[in-house]
Length: 152
Image (cartoon, rainbow, N blue to C red; front, side, top):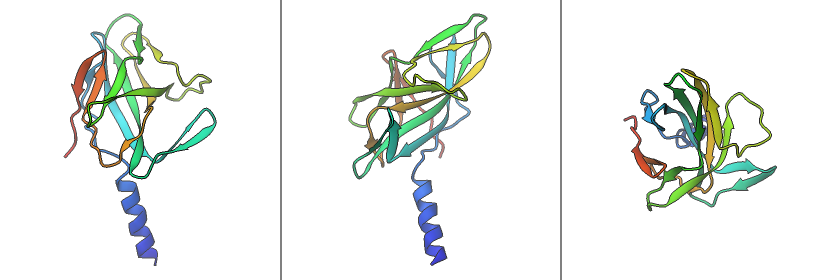
């Protein structure tokens, strides 16, 4: 019985995340680049003190991004034009942006400030759930498609 329970737990955990190459940085704009530090798929999410449950076979996507300011000036990064491109070529907008390690009363703070030559981490969550089987391959920033590098 314990083995069956352990195998069930192991399989349920392993399907919840997609493997993205964490070493690869992508261009956000001319002064800022980012890498996807973590990505997860979840059946439930909490927003505005409510819990939402995705339909069977669907998952909400959340990511932790590390942003790096490569300039000698403070940069403001705007996430209003940051999307996930799904398998049906539909843009999935962000629902939430939260600066990591900060308690924030405003989860919709789409502009994040980065000091010169510094890094910050932000947590983001996309608005609509997608198929749990879908492999996320493309992010769109300001109309530019960015193909993600997956781990094999």
